[in-house]
Amino acid sequence: MDLRIELATSASPDRLFSFVDDLADYPAWMGLVHAVGAAEGGAWNVELRGRIGPFARSKKLRMARTMIDAPSHVRFERSETDGRQHGRWILDARVESAVDGSHLTMDLHYSGRLWSSVVERALLDEVEASKARLSALLAD
Image 1 (cartoon, rainbow, N blue to C red):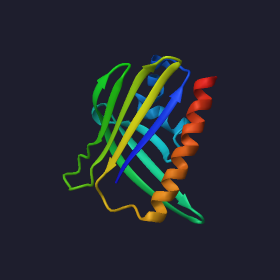
Image 2: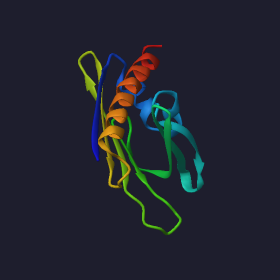
Image 3: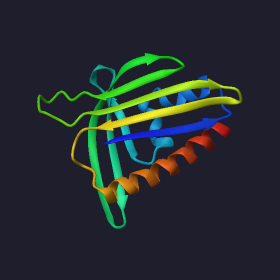
Image 4: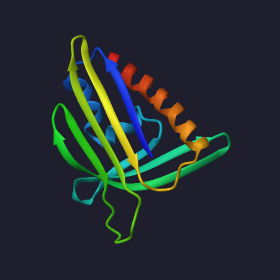
């Protein structure tokens, strides 16, 4: 699954980047990110949680920041330490300066088999809600 998320905001690139460069900040605005904790080696333990009606599904990942070029580009990749094979998760965020603020482009890649068309629709709905929450935080 590949998903692109875009957001235009009047916030400065530095301010926008401060919300996407540290996974610990994601639960405040990204509804799919239920919890984030520090992991060994500067990585994060991330719990994703999605709900469709009465059903909920959780997924726990160890994510590491594999690239940072502040305030314009950050990339996180799944980095498990258990020696097993796992689906790839890659989150790549780019912030560009715009005439009236900044623009965020986030690309999410997942190579596993978690998603069905129903789950993907719920994911897209949550992405839109998350964009609204991030916009509200940036406006404060």
